[in-house]
Image 1 (spheres, rainbow, N blue to C red):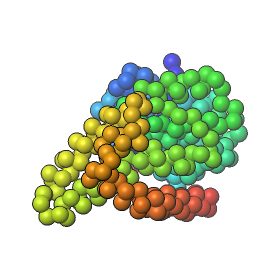
Image 2: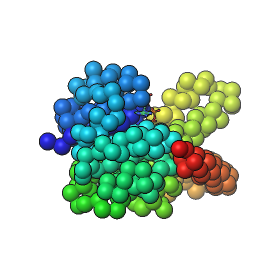
Image 3: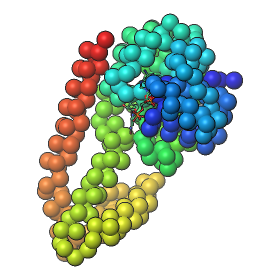
Amino acid sequence: MTRYGFIGTGSMGSMLIKQFIKTGKIVPAEITASSKSGISARSLAGKTGISAVSDNRTLAKIADVLFICVKPLEVRGVLKEIRGELKPGTLLVSIAACVSLANLGEWAGDTVRCVRLIPSLTAEQHAGISLVVWGRGVRPEDKSLVLNLLHTIGTTVETDEDSLEVCTNLTSCGPALIAAMMKEFAKGSVRTGTIPSELAEYLVRETMAGTAGLLTGGEMTFDGVVKRVATEGGSTEEGVKVLQARLPAVMDDVHGALFAKRRLVEKRVEDEK
Ligand SMILES: NC(=O)c1ccc[n+]([C@@H]2O[C@H](COP(=O)([O-])OP(=O)(O)OC[C@H]3O[C@@H](n4cnc5c(N)ncnc54)[C@H](OP(=O)(O)O)[C@@H]3O)[C@@H](O)[C@H]2O)c1
């Protein structure tokens, strides 16, 4: 039996555990989790039937596959704590942004095989993209195991660390960025003074869900949807022209802001002792 460990049972750790159980990929008896206070891990254990342990070292001793689901600034401390306890042959899967494979190798030890996984909240809907980057020494059977787990919670895209950051902007930050953009779209209609915000948000949400349906599976492209709706000479075409004129600069700023923040976090990750 493969034993799965999860250090960190916050938003993402608990989401992954619940989804892997829900899709039948892992049975609760195979999962042990820990958290900083122990409260979230115990609470999740009560709800799902997994085991919770009160310290990370105990977990490291038993896990064959160990998910690190703590904030970037906590990763070094956690790995330092468990380094001497890791089972020989452990596969380490870190979901932390801003913590490189080089960092993981340095802090966990060269013998540990490391994978970076960037999940997305969309996995709660069994949709969207999980990004993976394989570290040195990761074996074909490790890849099969990870890909087999992930394929029930959306689509997995294998990438490299150079592309990971910009892909992360689209897939992992994406749900928040898309929701924020759609909120502004709705607010624009409320400013006309003719409809309340609840109605505007409802209309946008439903339209967004329908548009996602049109785009799913690549049946229609973005351009295809625009062409079908924004017919030549119509009013939608005028709205699209405004977006095309103004949004490139906004989008450059959005990506730029994400990159800048990550440089700051990476520096703190490096400086953290
Ligand atoms: N949020 C996203 O959409 C998203 C997407 C992709 C990747 N990520 C990455 O996922 C990671 C976790 O993010 P999150 O949003 O799930 O954070 P979160 O909700 O704050 O959860 C962090 C978890 O880490 C635990 N923790 C902190 N220090 C610990 C320690 N020393 N030992 C054991 N457990 C410890 C916390 O314990 P307590 O419960 O006791 O506080 C908590 O359960 C981050 O590195 C982030 O970069 C997030």
